[in-house]
Image (cartoon, rainbow, N blue to C red; front, side):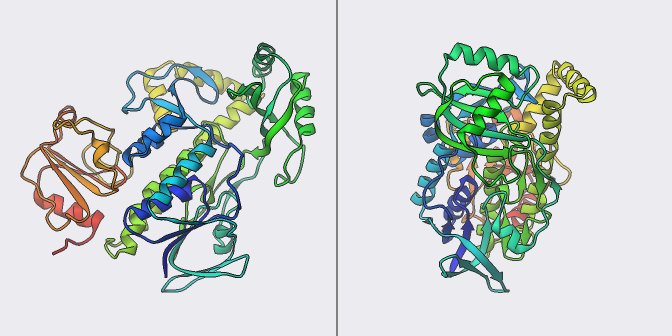
Length: 482
């Protein structure tokens, strides 16, 4: 029997497969499409996802194919402000990298770790019982697994087969998105776009580096009632002319697609042995570039927990904590994208006044910091109860006294005790938790005697009492071994 079937071979599914393989869980990824998509939905990674790649030793691969941009500029509702000073991260930048490249790098990573990835494998049915899940494919194949995770996008087949509610708001703002060549000089494009964007924030043409190749976004209200039908180049020309008075001579498209601002969230992320992650669990407008990052971080949260369940080491309630922790995070993203969409789309006096007020507030450092930590996900704090301010937060990469970087110690996806007392022990959990003694260095600035990190890098405990530590180790890593 397969341990876990992952439905969907996008960034969420591939990240989850790799996380499971770190713990020797047998994973099969089912991807409906025969070939990788050429559509570039996302153009970059935010700080927390960059940290995730660093935690798993992947960052150098991504840096080699991307471009670092300072965390500044138009970052909330297209309001142009500089970033706050000294973000709490070793990676204070946005990594510009097309999603097609991200997909390829995560695909290679999952394969290297031993995941099995099957293309042209479309799920059409599933059922579950107390022992496992049966997946039925379009070609009649039936597969049996202990768990199944739907990472199959906003129109998720898994979610629909489960009958999980997906409440929210339907698409109200529609747009066309594509990559194509233009037939006018770049200076002309820049001048016209700057004028149009004074009133229409959803409009844009940006050069991609290739000779005359641009990423084009143009509103498409009422162009079609069926968003599943790919747009045509003529539709782009018509809409460009309607908003800009010119079609810029667009031609030779690489790919064309549609998107909207539908905002929905699954009522539950788990039904028995089936779970949801990424866009299968939540969809929202693309403002702020949070979608891909949210999905990758879902997978990062779920992977070690599901692996612990598979290997029989999970304490009671660990797998359910995936929903408990990640559902509120996605809910917050939906809220901030709703707000940004309203402020970007509405010409009404009320929203325009709120936009001006928010722009004034963003001149305060604390306001800017709060908003940018929200968009980059470094401000997340899971509810682990009362305690130290670090509790429930991810720990930034820090340099330790022995010249290690913290994230260099997290590549294997295990727990980690950073101990400056020299008196603590992870005896009984050595197979799941690493112990680094005399880990001062930058930790001295945090004024903590010892810190216990979960495999996803979030602080589970701060203190120096061995009895308290053993209780927390059991809470997150299960019963002690012999």
